[in-house]
Length: 284
DNA sequence: AGGATAGCCTGCGGGC
DNA sequence: TGCCCGCAGGCTATCC
Image (cartoon, chains in turn brown, purple, green):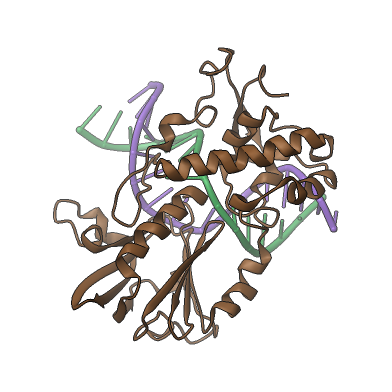
C-alpha cells in the first residue's frame, strides 16, 4: 500500500475535488469492505456521508478521514492496493474492463452545480472504510491507537520505544502504534539514510542514532511527498497520477545492486517478515 | 507479554 | 503462448 507520502498525496488531490462538495448519492457495491459504526445491520447511505457537505480531509499515518459539516466521518484505509479516485479518473474506462471490477463503493457529489464522481477501488481488499457519527468517535476508535504521525516524529518519541525492546529497529519503525505512516519502503530508506542497520535490536540504538533516525524519517517522507509518492505497481493519486519517488530509492528494491554512496553490494534478507535491503558498509 | 507465524486477496513478472 | 510459482506497499488473529 501506499505509505504516508502516497496517502498524503491522495488526501491533497482528493481535497481539490470534494472539499465543499455535497454528497448526493452513494452506493456500497461490496458491503464487506465497510465497517459501520453501529456494527450489525450493514452500512446505510447516511453513514457513507449521503446528504453531507465535505468540509475537511485529515490524515493520520496511512489513514484519511473525510469529515462532513455535520461531523459524520468516513475513514479510508488503502491497505495494499486501495485507491480513491475522483473526477475523470473515477469514470469507467471502456478500454480497461478490469478497472470496474474492483470498485467497491461509489459516490456522486455536486459542487458549484457540477457533478463529480468518487470511487473506492481495492483489488486485494486489504484496505477498507469505517464510518462514524463524529470525528471524535473515529479518533477514539482508530487514531488514538496509533503513535504520532511520522511527519511529526522526534527522538523523544522514538527513544523510549527503542530502548525498551529487543525487537529489531526495523520492526519498531513498522509498528503503527509507535509511529504512524512508515511502511516497508520508507523504513528501509530511512534506515539507509540514518546509517543504521535494520537488524539492530532496538535497545542497542544510541541516542545519536535515534536523532539521526528521526531526522532521516522526516526527510525521506518529505522528499517522497514532494515527488508525488512511490509508484511501484498500482499507486496513483485521486487524479490517477503516478508518483516518481521510486526513482530516488537508495535501498528499497535494490538488493544485490551497488550502494549509491559507497558502491558495496546491497544485502537483502527478511527482517520481521518483510523483505529488507541495507548496505553492509554504510549501515552499522 | 512480546514476538514470530499464518492468513487474508488479487495481479504481475519470471522461469520453464 | 501458457502455466505455475513466488512475490508484493498492510494488518490481524493465533500461537508459542
